[in-house]
Length: 304
Image 1: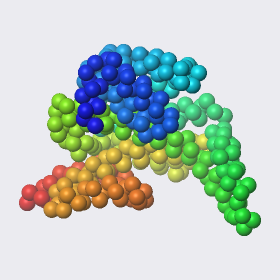
Image 2 (image 1 turned 30 degrees about the vertical axis):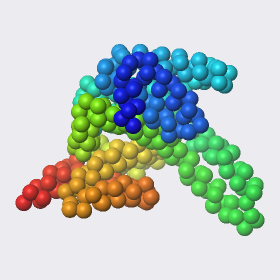
Image 3 (image 1 turned 60 degrees about the vertical axis):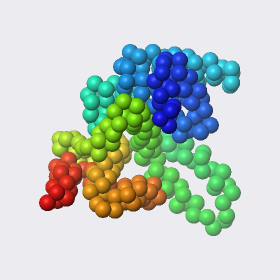
Image 4 (image 1 turned 135 degrees about the horizontal axis):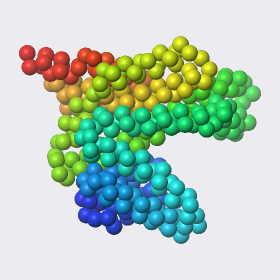
């Protein structure tokens, strides 16, 4: 995909064409939205916030015009573009000015947490809202299910999942945002600083104070009850996003220090995709790395 990055960085028109066209295509193939947002992020990372904002605004207008001719709707494409590109533009500025990928990830997670709290302030009963949404989604399945289907268990599962839907949706949004940022940073590295993204990624780490604050949020969720507990649990889901990236970076660096690194590193990512339960272990590694600096210990043992 390096050729696409080279095309985007040629000029404003090229960046706007890629961003707007792929944004509309992502309505049919959602993963394409990552590439679309990465186009705006690449311009911002390379040429600054003002240039990125220019591309963002005119990409929104282009997407709106395309949406009008294709779907007869102007407002939807315009709002979709803003929702897709505005957050990654902000995070790209954080990364460009702060020069630390870990800080950009933490800011993205913090924005997600603000979104969770804002949603609970805006909606009177978030759990009831998600219960109604999930009930509508599974209704066709319940109607066509056999007589011996565990309908009560399904309803109980809906009740449980509805408590965490806000955090799950926010986490999915942040994951998409960060994947777009990572792609843009990798493009920038491939074009102007070969190997730079890999070095940045493998050095991901959070400050011990951040890890302490994370544990406090989990403790409040565990010990409290009601809306406060629910909000904290949903915020904890977003913390999983942060420590998944950090823990994966630690394990990646650890596997690189082995003789089987050619096979061990791909195996790590394949396992994360195929066995999601492993993420719990990865999160624990990410949290403890804040205090133990596991990579330094691994490298020191390797050099002994």
